[in-house]
Length: 313
Image (tube, rainbow, N blue to C red; front, side, top):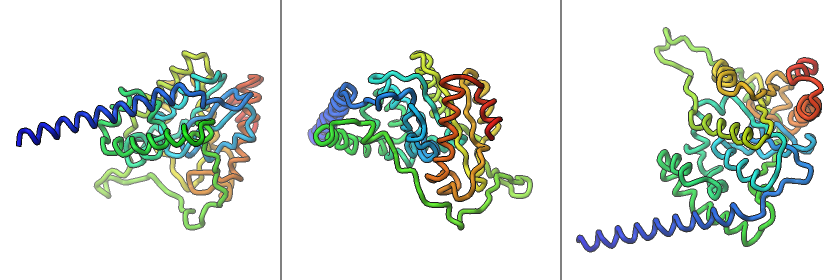
């Protein structure tokens, strides 16, 4: 019996060692390949989750590439930006700073139920120490992502081997459908705990996601890159969580970062695909506005961001 247990332990050790070896080899090859060139003339990139990927049509924003993807937490955005800066020089970075990116729900995008969306394609670029942070939280999720990631990298290296940004980090599918009538229900975050006997709202923030937002900010500072936060509009049928906390964090933790807040941009119901996300019609409107703002207040600095927004909205 002892001999059998010993064999199992040896096999487990060798198997784990082999998997770790494969992950490290994958990381070595993928990090050093010349697969991360941005289009010529790129001055800035947009990072964030689905709010940003649906809102900004980068064909209408001069010199800016939208690399935001659905379910992308700042944890993944940090390593994406780090890899991009190994191969490109940027002047500007625009990060979607939205209410649900600071809420505790953001943890789901990093290591929770949506771990399979981003981890497989980002695994080669995440340091072992940082991977351990989410492996402790969700070991099964990380274990499931490893073979998917290895196959993804193998397929890229053997079949594509051109540009990893275009094939895995660029979501160009802005929805074209219009907000369903059934979803046009105005939500409310109001609750009367004295009557209901329970708390309806979650007032917690994602410390992990905010930590990596801070890391993004520091990386930009260290590389002399101008960092801006963006906030895209959402429909009147969606309630933004943690609004006071949203502004409190910005003022106390990121006093040097300017927020380009387009939350009040006038859009119609038919500019949205669902209560949270714009469709192509709305994205084209907001993208033209952002293009003009960048030209005036970021690139040329002929007027402040707030002055531009106040004049145009």
